[in-house]
Image (cartoon, rainbow, N blue to C red; front, side, top):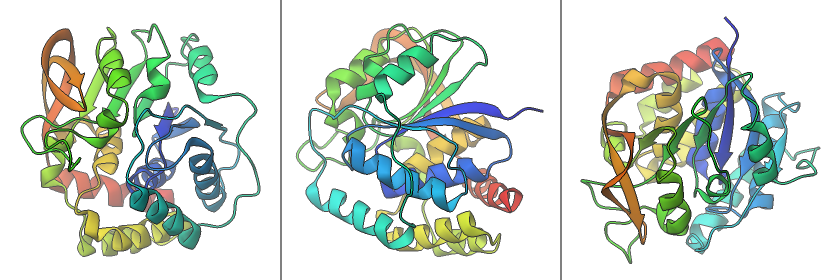
Length: 285
């Protein structure tokens, strides 16, 4: 079987890097390109971090395109911490981002039906909001929103940061009539980061597994890796329990609406989650 082509749209935070390392190791995934968006890190800084991870993975043929900034900045401490962690754990990239921007790349790529591609969106939806239409044959898996659980924006209790950073973009994408799967904070409550998970990943050996295990150990204070769950949901849909309904976004708050229905994950299976991650890193070696 040929691996499924995937484009990863990311703001290059620590949990994004876990997700990308997982997909790089997964034998059933071919990462066609990575696009960066302003969020936890600025787009060009994020592109340099992604290029460093690709250097570690010996996957430097994967193109990286820097994209748009969000309308709201993430907390400065998150940005500084993410960039310091990446500098500590990753080699310096020898390459640079490609010559044209992420939005242009996404528009042109999603006009081509063959081969079909899936997009994993792990940051604010600023880039994807500029892509219209999103064709019916392209599947989107999106990490964002919170429905029945508190958000993670202290000043807006029900808001989630990816949606809060650019609420207009998030609502625009939610109105697209496309094959979309949303992984909100609700689904991550059963899939915490743990030292035992880090140890299981490390046992696979190899540079990607070693990097991912070190990253999990350093990120235990985050408790949950929502972006990693979204990546697992892309490869193992049975990891989540989903319900279909429309979604609108206002001030970073997601709620049911009369928009076109999307599949929303409300719970996740921890055993499937951890087994999928560890299996990918073993296979990657």
